[in-house]
Image 1 (cartoon, rainbow, N blue to C red):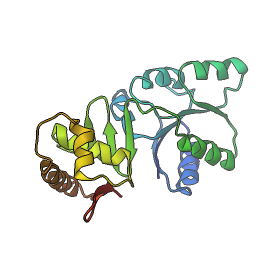
Image 2 (image 1 turned 30 degrees about the vertical axis):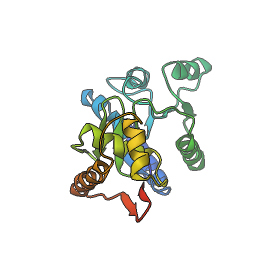
Image 3 (image 1 turned 30 degrees about the horizontal axis):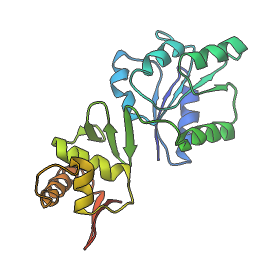
Length: 219
């Protein structure tokens, strides 16, 4: 499931987008105009669908500014289909340009193709399940709740989340987080995991499991 933001001043278009993408299990947030506070929430979305011609801030202007806050794919949905319009859309940071009118199948295919892409380097943020990591801030969030991790807890959680499914022993976690030369007790990893789980549970999630006799992994 991906968290998708759709911005279009045509309410019927938003309903169509939401109903279409829900079929693939995506969660779609719809907005009819761009607000000043929206930039602070952009990192919560995995993909943005954006109209060009809107009252107030237009899509081109918003796309250019949005690139300072998110790495996620931005797809224009617009009737502006001249070659120069398409070129300009890509120049301001868009990843794709879907011309109206478009088919439901095309919309689903384009959106899912961009979500499958693994080549995009995660510079600012990435998410695993309901947990989103803000890499430039060293923060982890569950929904809209910031997880109060210490520096060590954040690094351990990030290691497991980035490599979800892979089992890490306490020694491997220690080496990856602290390095080989740090003088400390490896048994501290057990206490860190305990505290991490407690904070995740308070946010209603429990993604870390113990593989007895081996170590830990993010489910």
